[in-house]
Length: 80
Length: 80
Image 1 (cartoon, each protein chain N blue to C red):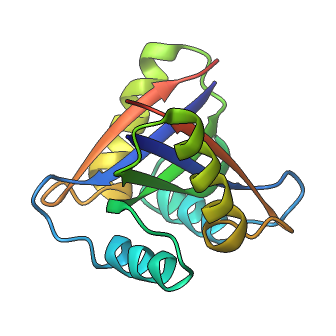
Image 2: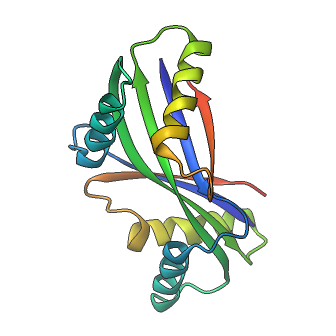
Protein backbone atom coordinates (compact mmCIF):
# COMPACT_ATOMS: atom_id res chain seq x y z
CA UNK A 1 0.00 0.00 0.00
CA UNK A 2 1.53 3.30 -1.09
CA UNK A 3 0.67 6.72 0.25
CA UNK A 4 1.61 10.29 -0.50
CA UNK A 5 1.88 12.72 2.38
CA UNK A 6 2.03 16.50 2.01
CA UNK A 7 3.22 18.57 4.96
CA UNK A 8 2.68 22.32 4.59
CA UNK A 9 3.04 25.31 6.87
CA UNK A 10 -0.26 26.65 8.24
CA UNK A 11 -1.54 29.94 6.87
CA UNK A 12 0.03 32.87 8.65
CA UNK A 13 3.19 30.99 9.62
CA UNK A 14 6.26 32.68 8.16
CA UNK A 15 8.11 30.60 5.56
CA UNK A 16 11.74 31.80 5.39
CA UNK A 17 12.70 28.91 3.09
CA UNK A 18 9.98 29.86 0.61
CA UNK A 19 11.05 33.51 0.79
CA UNK A 20 14.66 32.51 0.10
CA UNK A 21 13.56 30.51 -2.97
CA UNK A 22 11.51 33.50 -4.16
CA UNK A 23 14.47 35.87 -3.82
CA UNK A 24 16.77 33.41 -5.59
CA UNK A 25 14.30 33.13 -8.50
CA UNK A 26 13.97 36.92 -8.67
CA UNK A 27 17.78 37.22 -8.73
CA UNK A 28 17.72 34.84 -11.72
CA UNK A 29 15.35 37.23 -13.52
CA UNK A 30 11.98 35.58 -12.84
CA UNK A 31 9.44 38.31 -12.10
CA UNK A 32 5.74 38.30 -11.25
CA UNK A 33 6.02 35.97 -8.27
CA UNK A 34 3.40 36.69 -5.66
CA UNK A 35 4.38 34.09 -3.10
CA UNK A 36 6.22 30.81 -2.74
CA UNK A 37 5.54 28.35 0.10
CA UNK A 38 7.75 25.34 0.54
CA UNK A 39 6.51 22.11 2.01
CA UNK A 40 7.51 18.48 2.31
CA UNK A 41 6.37 15.60 0.15
CA UNK A 42 6.83 12.11 1.54
CA UNK A 43 6.09 8.87 -0.31
CA UNK A 44 5.51 5.95 2.04
CA UNK A 45 5.38 2.32 0.95
CA UNK A 46 3.80 0.17 3.66
CA UNK A 47 3.46 -3.62 3.80
CA UNK A 48 -0.10 -3.12 5.16
CA UNK A 49 -2.78 -4.13 2.62
CA UNK A 50 -5.83 -2.56 4.25
CA UNK A 51 -6.18 1.06 3.17
CA UNK A 52 -8.09 2.16 6.29
CA UNK A 53 -5.40 0.68 8.55
CA UNK A 54 -2.64 2.17 6.40
CA UNK A 55 -4.27 5.59 6.69
CA UNK A 56 -4.48 5.17 10.48
CA UNK A 57 -0.80 4.20 10.74
CA UNK A 58 0.34 7.09 8.58
CA UNK A 59 -1.84 9.53 10.52
CA UNK A 60 -0.04 8.41 13.69
CA UNK A 61 3.34 8.79 11.95
CA UNK A 62 2.45 12.34 10.91
CA UNK A 63 1.36 13.34 14.40
CA UNK A 64 4.41 11.78 16.08
CA UNK A 65 7.21 12.58 13.66
CA UNK A 66 6.52 13.81 10.14
CA UNK A 67 4.61 17.02 10.91
CA UNK A 68 4.85 19.62 13.64
CA UNK A 69 1.11 20.08 14.14
CA UNK A 70 1.61 23.37 16.00
CA UNK A 71 2.67 25.09 12.76
CA UNK A 72 2.07 22.51 10.01
CA UNK A 73 -0.87 20.84 8.30
CA UNK A 74 -0.63 17.43 6.70
CA UNK A 75 -2.70 15.52 4.17
CA UNK A 76 -2.58 11.81 3.36
CA UNK A 77 -3.49 10.28 -0.01
CA UNK A 78 -3.59 6.51 -0.19
CA UNK A 79 -2.57 5.63 -3.74
CA UNK A 80 -2.80 1.87 -4.19
CA UNK B 1 -2.35 31.65 -11.10
CA UNK B 2 -1.31 29.06 -8.51
CA UNK B 3 0.75 25.98 -9.16
CA UNK B 4 1.94 22.99 -7.20
CA UNK B 5 5.37 21.59 -7.95
CA UNK B 6 6.61 18.20 -6.78
CA UNK B 7 10.34 17.49 -6.90
CA UNK B 8 11.27 13.86 -6.30
CA UNK B 9 14.46 11.84 -6.55
CA UNK B 10 14.71 9.67 -9.65
CA UNK B 11 14.37 5.91 -9.25
CA UNK B 12 17.63 4.33 -8.26
CA UNK B 13 19.02 7.45 -6.61
CA UNK B 14 19.78 6.82 -2.94
CA UNK B 15 17.63 8.82 -0.52
CA UNK B 16 19.49 9.13 2.80
CA UNK B 17 16.89 11.56 4.17
CA UNK B 18 14.08 9.09 3.47
CA UNK B 19 16.11 6.30 5.08
CA UNK B 20 16.67 8.46 8.17
CA UNK B 21 12.93 9.11 8.44
CA UNK B 22 12.26 5.38 8.07
CA UNK B 23 14.72 4.50 10.84
CA UNK B 24 13.28 7.20 13.12
CA UNK B 25 9.76 5.82 12.58
CA UNK B 26 10.96 2.27 13.26
CA UNK B 27 12.64 3.50 16.47
CA UNK B 28 9.23 4.92 17.48
CA UNK B 29 7.70 1.44 17.02
CA UNK B 30 6.20 1.73 13.53
CA UNK B 31 6.82 -1.52 11.68
CA UNK B 32 5.93 -2.78 8.21
CA UNK B 33 7.54 0.09 6.34
CA UNK B 34 8.85 -1.00 2.97
CA UNK B 35 10.34 2.29 1.82
CA UNK B 36 10.12 6.03 2.39
CA UNK B 37 11.18 8.59 -0.22
CA UNK B 38 11.32 12.24 0.67
CA UNK B 39 10.72 14.98 -1.84
CA UNK B 40 9.95 18.66 -2.01
CA UNK B 41 6.58 20.29 -2.45
CA UNK B 42 6.53 23.90 -3.62
CA UNK B 43 3.43 26.07 -3.96
CA UNK B 44 3.95 28.98 -6.34
CA UNK B 45 1.58 31.92 -6.68
CA UNK B 46 2.28 33.81 -9.90
CA UNK B 47 0.77 37.09 -11.10
CA UNK B 48 0.57 35.56 -14.62
CA UNK B 49 -3.04 34.82 -15.69
CA UNK B 50 -2.37 32.60 -18.69
CA UNK B 51 -1.99 28.97 -17.58
CA UNK B 52 0.20 27.96 -20.57
CA UNK B 53 2.60 30.84 -19.90
CA UNK B 54 2.59 30.12 -16.17
CA UNK B 55 3.48 26.49 -16.89
CA UNK B 56 6.31 27.64 -19.17
CA UNK B 57 7.71 30.02 -16.51
CA UNK B 58 7.56 27.41 -13.78
CA UNK B 59 9.17 24.81 -16.04
CA UNK B 60 12.09 27.22 -16.52
CA UNK B 61 12.24 27.82 -12.74
CA UNK B 62 12.41 24.07 -12.12
CA UNK B 63 15.19 23.56 -14.63
CA UNK B 64 17.25 26.51 -13.38
CA UNK B 65 16.76 26.34 -9.62
CA UNK B 66 14.09 24.18 -8.05
CA UNK B 67 15.16 20.76 -9.29
CA UNK B 68 18.52 19.14 -9.96
CA UNK B 69 17.55 17.38 -13.17
CA UNK B 70 20.55 15.06 -13.00
CA UNK B 71 19.04 13.22 -10.04
CA UNK B 72 15.53 14.65 -9.64
CA UNK B 73 12.23 14.61 -11.52
CA UNK B 74 9.70 17.39 -11.24
CA UNK B 75 6.00 17.71 -12.01
CA UNK B 76 3.92 20.87 -12.33
CA UNK B 77 0.18 21.12 -11.62
CA UNK B 78 -1.48 24.40 -12.46
CA UNK B 79 -4.29 24.78 -9.93
CA UNK B 80 -6.26 27.93 -10.71
